[in-house]
Length: 87
Image 1 (cartoon, rainbow, N blue to C red):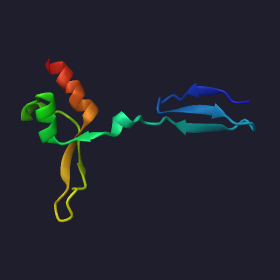
Image 2: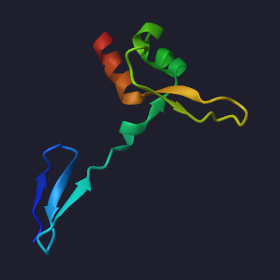
Image 3: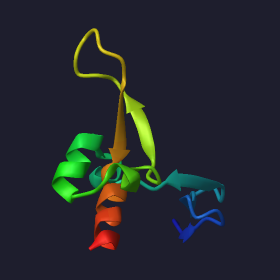
Image 4: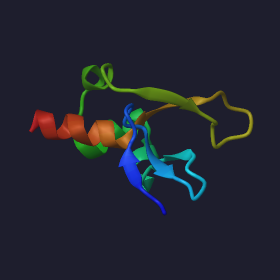
């Protein structure tokens, strides 16, 4: 018997196992939720200004070049949302 309900914190689902114990499953992220975009690309593709990027989430990623420092990238879904608000 397997019963599935949303957990109280909303981060996963609780399921009842055959022995009656609860098991918490994590929801999977979609592929678009973890895509990143560079600041230059965000400004050119989405017509944003540097001031528009200051309020967005950003993260540091490994540089594609061997001897370069990490680069700052923005979450693509945040950039797209900002673009929609600016239209």
